[in-house]
Length: 337
Image (cartoon, rainbow, N blue to C red):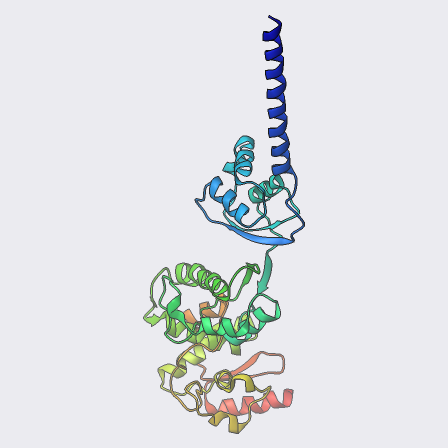
């Protein structure tokens, strides 16, 4: 009888010791940080299981045990709330803190990239590099290869100029230059292709390509919203009459890195397909990335009789029907300066 009691007592203490060991290991594995590693970005793909996530975290040496992490996720019920996406985890966090971060979504890694309307590809690349979000050369290389991107709308062959939609983008240091371009193309798809064009490659007989090119001219020339559609109407009138557009903005684009605050007569003779003082019709591609307002103006230009315009000092324009009126308007604008 005593022997049985002793055996039971021994079994009890042995079981208690095992439980204490397991509890200690669990506490050590789940509640004690691995080390002092700094912030690290991890990606959770939609559809990944808790086991997949745990194995990835173990491989990144952010947790001690994949099994313990999975056990904690299932026993707390948090396995259902793990969010797909990119997360910033700190090596000084415990496994349970990382689990909480994956459930609520870590946002410390996100940074904002602001691309104003009218930026061309070179300016976007420079902004990207300035903000520490990518390399200018890598961005330009990717933007010069539209074929590597899959989109529902027709893209040009040589450059994504005009299709990198200006907006504020949330990005992080783990994204490549191509990833950022994908965000811009998706935004173009949402705003321009699906909303404005309703998924059609033509609008009132004019192609998406031609409208984006025209919108890029409007974006560069118009400084006041109320004049966007009027300037688009001037360009459309000249196109329909077979007149050269004679748009200063296209010459500035042709000058590239050598742009000037004021063009001289010699600049208007630059040998470029983009020089609308020499060539009739639209330039071969957009000269910047226009915003929604300019695209709408290019889609529905104002029905005006004007063929000419000249800028006033305040950024507004004087519009004219004839060349003689235009010459008089230029004189008035100069007096205003």
